[in-house]
Amino acid sequence: MQRLGKATLWEPFVVSLSNHERNSIDSLPFDKLRANGLLIVFLSTFFLARLASADVLYYRSGETEKGLVVEEHPDRIIFKVELEEKTVLRKDLDEVFYDDPERNNLYLGNQAFEARDFGAARGFFRKALQMNPQFQEAEDALHHLEDWQKKWTPSEDVDPVAALDSRWGLAVARGPDYPVVRVVREGSRTSRWGIVSGDLLVSVWGSSLAYRLLKEVAHELWGPPESPMKLTIRRAVFCPQNASHWPGMQLDMRRLGLTVVSVEPGGAAQQSGIQAQDRIVAVNSRPTRYLPLAQAHKTIQQAHRKGINLLIERDLMIRRE
Image 1: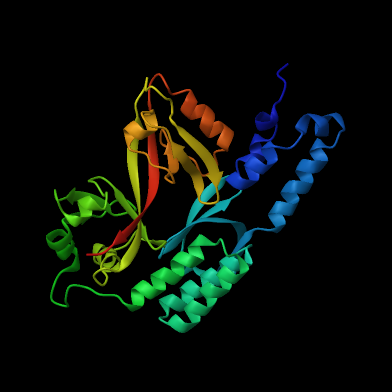
Image 2 (image 1 turned 90 degrees about the horizontal axis):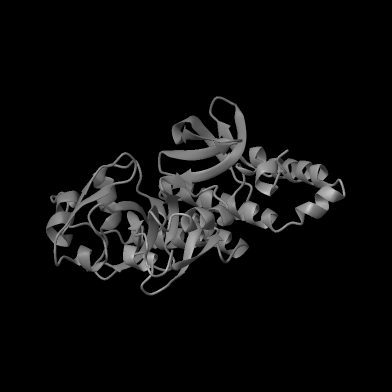
C-alpha cells in the first residue's frame, strides 16, 4: 500500500492555494500531526478559515460568488473558484470586494481613475500604501496616475501606433490577449531598452495592456520626453541542456510569483538571457501560479538533459526619449 506524502494527501485541496500559502504549509510537521491524530482537524480548520477570507464578486444579476481574483484587466478579471479559473467580464459586475483592505482601496482608486477623478484616486492609492508600504501595485498606480496626467502623444493628426514605428522603431500587433512586438528596428531606442521581436507587452505601471485596442496600447506607451515608464514584458526563452551550471539560477516564491533571485555566470539561465528579478510564469507551458516552490525546483532540475522552455516576465524601467 502506497504511503501518502504531504502533496498526495491533500492534493484536492492544495491546488487551490496561493503559492505563499502552499510554501508556508510545506514547512509544517505533518508526520507529528498525523501521529497525534490532528492532521484532519488541522486541514479542516485551515481550509474553513481560508474559505471565510475570500474575495467576493457582486454581479449585476444580484448573485454573489466567493473565490480569488488572480488577474485584472480593463474589461475582465480572471477569478479562481475552487479548482477552476473563469473569466468574468466587468460589465457583468456591480462591485468586487477583496479580502485585503489595501486591495479594496486600490480597487476604489482604479474606479476613481476611470472616472477621471484623479484627486480621489490619489487618495485611495495613498491609503492603500499606508496600510501596506510594500504594496507595489499601489505604488505603481500612483506613478501611472502621474504619468496619465502628463500624458503626451505626437499630435492629434498622427496615428499613435504608426508613430511608435517611425519614432521608436517599434511595430506591434494584436495577440490573443497581450499585444505582441512584431518588429524592433535595429539601432532604435526600443532595441536599446532591451525589447525584442516576439515579446508580449503586459502592462505600463501595472496597468494591463491585455485585450485592448492598439491605439489604446500606444496611448499608454507615449508620454513626455525624458519621462519614466515601467513597462512589463513577457518573453519565451529556452534553457539549453548540458550547460556548465544547471539551471544556473536561484529561485524564490514571492508575492508576485516565482522569482529569479540570482543568475550564475555561464549557467543555462544566463545563456537563455534570464536576469535576476525576472518572474517565471510558465515552465514547459505549465503555469506557475499554483506551483509550489519545491515542485518548480524539481521540474526544472529534471530537465537538465533536454533543456526547458520558460515564459518569463520582466519589468523594464524606461526613460522615454
